[in-house]
Length: 235
Image (tube, rainbow, N blue to C red; front, side, top):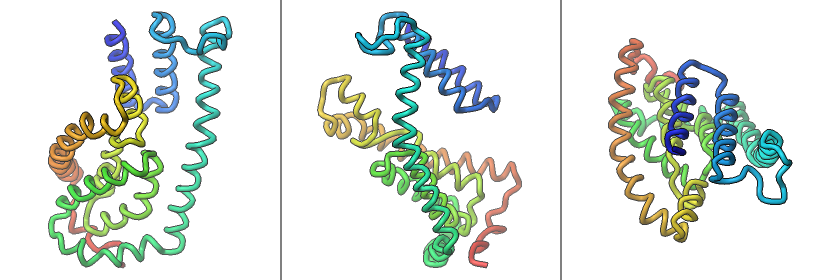
């Protein structure tokens, strides 16, 4: 039953995103519903024994407060710092200098969609070491994005290709790897090497091909011509 409930919640979240509901409120509400369901069905209490507030509503509020305080203190400051670095890189012209430095090898690739394969592989490797999806995306938007635009990649395609590899987590620094290793009682490196790697390899074979086909379709539908933007960032 818990699987059906979880799938239903995920489905409602997907529907809400498609309807352009507020993503933060949607995800918070979905998380609270899952916590409440786990508590009511005896799967897992919201708070450990001895810390309960006596009512489910107050337990959920306490859990929400704890998570918010922890995440804002750690993730929030990281995001602000990286956003500041990205803005400063643009301000001093470092992004423009990077575009100029990489223009010759990048422009040598006549079909800009081929670059999407390299970008997906590169971002996937970076995500192993920079485990924050938003942090990595912000950093690459100030460095890799203008390089892609200069090569003739559309804005939507460039952003999508940068973000896509952060949709799946791989590596010992990712929280899903930690949870997975604890669930099956193995060392985290064993979990990554023997359980995650095969799926990572399959994704890195399939996703780049699907991404190229889909982005070409979307660009064609929008009437985008890659030659219109090639060399644009060098002007």
